Amino acid sequence: MIFIYLFISAVFLLLLYMYIEAHRNRVIFDSVKIDKLPRSFENFKIFFISDVHKRKISEEIVLVAKKADLVIIGGDLVEKGVPMKRVEDNIKLLSKLGPVFFVWGNNDYDVEPAQLADTIVKQGARILDNTSFSIKKNNEKIELVGINDISLGYSSLEDALHDCQSQCRILISHNPDISKSISTHHSIQLVISGHTHGGQIRLGPFGIAKKGGWYREDTHILLVSNGYGATHLPLRLGAPSQTHLLSLTR
Image 1 (spheres, rainbow, N blue to C red):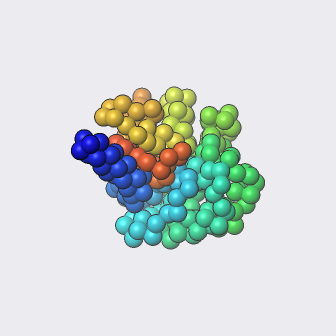
Image 2 (cartoon, rainbow, N blue to C red; image 1 turned 135 degrees about the horizontal axis):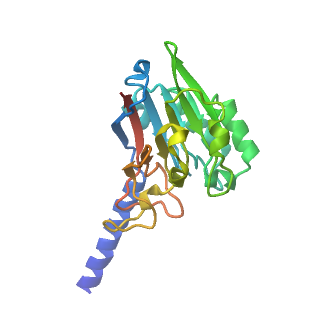
């Protein structure tokens, strides 16, 4: 009988820990070296958040991150059942950090896409849907390139890069698998992604999806974020909830 009580207590404590891990408000501060970064963009700061899903973004995130030159939402801002009021509130909060950019994730199509797009734009955010945006400072510029979700077949890397002029390009893709399609001629130095949740529940090195972290690919650097929210079950193990404040350096 004592063994049963101990077992039940251990399971309860483990589930409580996993629930806490799934609801942490963690900001990871990273410095990212980009060889082709123009001098004017030294210490340019990007706040990145992906896979919000059902969560309401905490004010704590803004207090910790403080300020960014721009904010990127890397897809899965919503999933089925998320009210548009929560989307409005989350974008309003992120706007306190800086101008907001959004790319589509697979779960963003669980709601009416036109309604979600309208809500995002009305809050002053810009949607990068197989398009790019030039950021200029002191007659120098970098290109912010965003593609639609690749798992649903909506992505077009060539369309997204069509109007790019600068050789310093940062690609935002919800799904990190886009990394396999990047060649030297694309001139992409950094890829920022989410989608995998870091596996969400990992047992040591083992997980059902790609582990979150930094990866050095042949032509670029890849960030895979664990993401902010969770899907199916609001539980995490070995892949805690996270957001990122990236400082670009030469």
